[in-house]
Image (cartoon, rainbow, N blue to C red):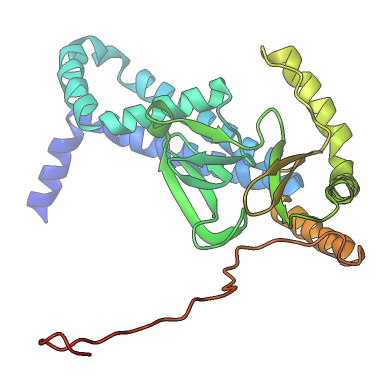
Length: 307
């Protein structure tokens, strides 16, 4: 026991050890104070996005206090430790280059408007809604994969922020929270193509017309912000005639989160309207029909030439 006491006393006689203990105690106190403050403020804020931002801001402020605490305690020894810090820093930078790149990516995300909390993005082939951004990783609630269309599949994906420097970032809802979508309706040759076009145009205006005015307003802001043309927002129908059928393409804008439901409503209404045309308009499909076949005659000959 006496030997242990002597060891502890020898440690405490070293000013650097004392300073490290002071740093540890200071970090503990700062962490406790800011965690209590975050919990208290979060319980008073109902808005989820604002509550998330408050927690992040308090976390960054606590990091600043910790850094200031360390500088204050070691201030008199900083000059002596400059060379050591330089060598150690170079080694740490090499070992943690991916971490540093991720932190740089977080800075780019925060100030470069790549995406924000709540946006639907696609990163490296993974599509989902951004549910968290921290200095190292972006967290997505994944959509698609084995689930059809743009619906959640239940997986949470964490992607290093350094990714933004390596591949394109697709944002479905950044400046323009709508997307253009299309459906293809094949119609049989010989039908009333004018009636078919009229039905499709009427149905798409009925189902997606509610998105036109909001999309126009958002697109107007896009034109003022970027060098971009004034695209057509209203839904329209185009026709291509090929060997198999008349191929109508219906193009429209839709809320990026309602793409699947909108397609369902469109096809349901189109089928209802086509069924009421008394076969003046019929949907086409790829079929193979054997109309006739010529008779097969088989002749067998023996080796000596006789039948």
